[in-house]
View 1 (cartoon, rainbow, N blue to C red):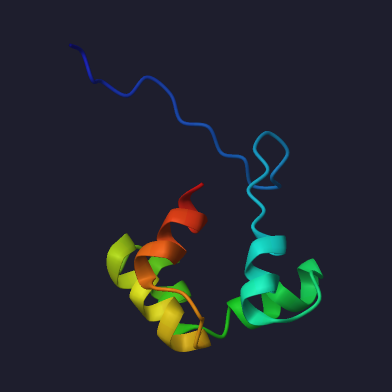
View 2: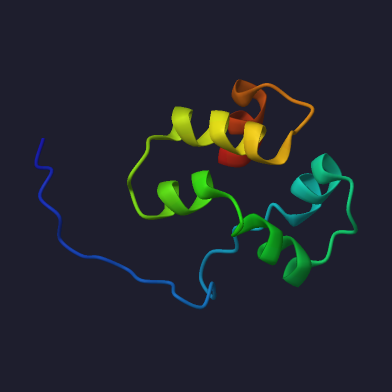
Length: 84
């Protein structure tokens, strides 16, 4: 099987793929599902920043987010929801 990369697609503005976990994350945090306020809160997490810059793997990210935000779910449950 040939696994050579033949192209890269950047969807910077989220036009082609909409990844939006606002409703589920807002529910876990107990806040209104408003994109701007959730985004502000999301970026306060050291685990989010480390994951978005490739410094930690998904398992470490999930454990960190659950701890950072004191979420009422296990890291495994969070990761399942985050990846869906």
